Length: 69
Image (tube, rainbow, N blue to C red):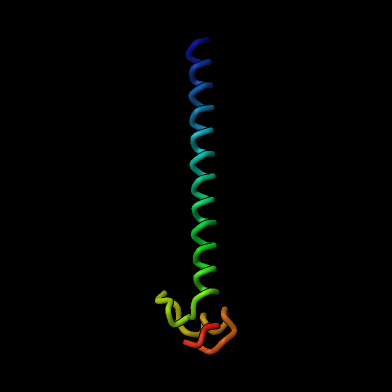
């Protein structure tokens, strides 16, 4: 009975640790995506050196390539 009880507590600990880790990971992904979007919208597209073709910048920004906002 004691081993079942300790196993139950171990499962609760693992589940809480995994949920906390997933929550922190998702918040980090949200923060980095928000930073990327804000950098893309507040700076001209020729300042950003990401491996995207110019058509992606033209489609996302709605301006000609290298002009930015």
